[in-house]
Image (cartoon, rainbow, N blue to C red; front, top):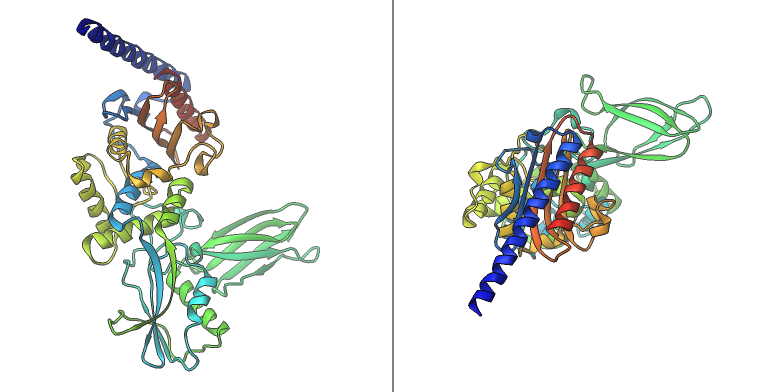
Length: 443
């Protein structure tokens, strides 16, 4: 009987070896056919049950991970903040005529909610103070690209987050031969150099002209219909204060004094608050890759970790401590922000696949999208019930990492990183999809 059992397990091991060799052969064949340089791609596949490496290629080479990094930073951040954490923007009264707004850095706070919050301010109010101490005043991450300041996916962020830190402009066609009309509902002070004309098609290009002023916009192109565009706020504190003045005014509150930063006192009385749940942010970050929300959550978790002001440094310390507790050596990688936007971030495919293995039961992993959702909306649909993964995309960079269950029913963690200037973004995604298909079919 013992001989039969030993033979049975030997056959299983032999079968697994054959499968691993088959996958290795197919993956190398796919990579060779793609035209990518072999040192520009890293792959790591681990058995999700025991963490053993099934296949690897360049898995210890440091590469930029793009938004795949969010899986790591957000898992640590949720663990630190707690699943029930809420962003809470709060209004306090200080005596009869003074109020204070304590900011939370809520990445989902909207003007309509700010207006609702200020309805609790009574007529005759003299001062509204602002407590912005929850986050530092560094509004962009280390290594973010200065020439991307008009990218709506990478707005500045901080304690004063409001309306996604994007300013809405409406462009309306006017009479034939005249320039289009620009409407700015926010009242944020822009200077427009308007070169947009009427046409039978709509194509608008907007650039910032800092040589004149940070708020000077040059608008070129044509419009055939009313068009809405969004501009990243150059000064999020100023935008918040303008909208707060507007909200108070709509509630018939007109202050005599400007807003002053002040720390909340323990004697202040809570009058109203606006809350959003961390769970919503986690879903948005891991499914839709929301950079502003990821950066905010990362810093907030860092602030809680040190019991102080949230900074990128405290976020990094929080992350390193989280890894140390799991015997993950974070000295082999480099994390500089929470979102993966920075070109200074460096991970290895082996580290990512091991992190996923050790955190496979983490609550955060439930937010990873399946094919048909978020950034996987149009990818890998034939295996939508067998895959959960986070994607990443930056200039010359593509990545994907997560969990895959093969056709035979075995689960694996995986990471694919590509730092290549030759392949187009679509070809990089196709290469990832082909590799994942082979994992699904052959393992």
